[in-house]
Length: 194
Image 1 (cartoon, rainbow, N blue to C red):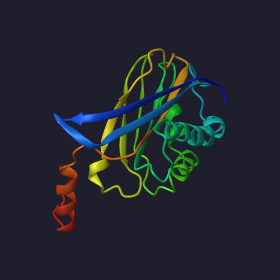
Image 2: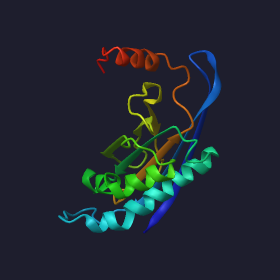
Image 3: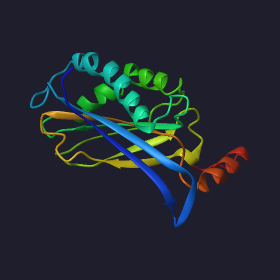
Image 4: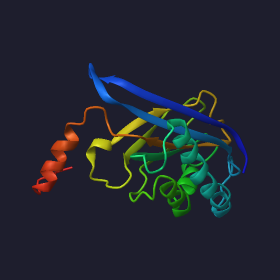
């Protein structure tokens, strides 16, 4: 596995909407910038890419993100994943790594035996391009208070022949969730339209 760099971002929000939060909203994203062996060519069988990166990154990235937050997998409340492929690659190359049970099962196990599917984003872009990581509750996809996104970028990645693979974890949901509560009440009444 060839990783050019690991990149970690930790965000802590203390005031949201002009109101202090009771507990800071903390989000950590860790990304690996890897060489794309299929950049510049079409390859039918992507299994070698899966075999090389899926399990390894499915363990490494959430582990590092939890370390950045200083929490255990059980304390993680929400998560997400993303792949940003350099312009000489295909979006399918990033999807091959993150859209496997190998990647997802490792990620879920590290996050306290989480149950929900990992929300994801994938696209192609140049170095410094941003990607919005979709995040949701790790146990129940209907917990709307944890639905959010996190914009992420690395100034020098991905290069044309690279893939940026990222994992996000949080220790809470949004700062002052009000919509999430309303949706939960409507769902309980059978009126949820989301």
